[in-house]
Image 1 (cartoon, rainbow, N blue to C red):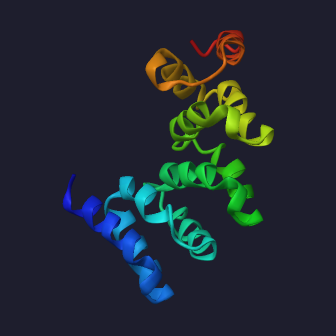
Image 2: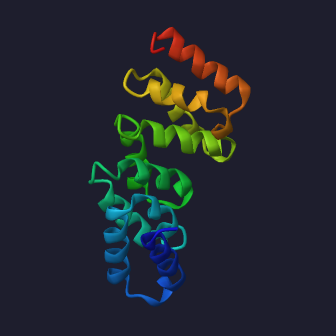
Amino acid sequence: MNALEDIGRRIRRISGYLDEDILKTIIIKISSRAPFTLFNLTWTIPVHIKNEVLLYLAQDKKLVGHVAEQIIFHYENLSPELRSLLFKLADDKECGYNIASVISLNYTQLPSNVRNLIFKLADNKETAKDVYELLLNNSYVNLPNEVKEDLLMRIRKNKFI
């Protein structure tokens, strides 16, 4: 574990005691430098702070994939603005792999409109390679077999592989 990840875990523990503006600033600063800490930092913070932080971080091209992951993980509790942002991010080739991987891990627990994003990614010329790469790594995919087959058929049909 590196220092930023450790700080992220500690902040998560004390987040209830911090002023909201200070908490948002800390999360934004740490996430900007170490995007992988976003998971730890956003897991237990209040939803309204999570909404603000994710909307802010989504403006940074280096972080959009990580933001998309967090939107999927917290989808049911987030604002309509963030929910719609997820569907916009699905059009961003920088987010394809992140979105496909989180959907594949949580497929059965997600609402159907979020699950369907993986098919949209498979149909998109710029993100189909991400879905294909994910399917090749079977240990990381938790999709029903019929979904895997459908994704492969879409990728083949559109001549992406």
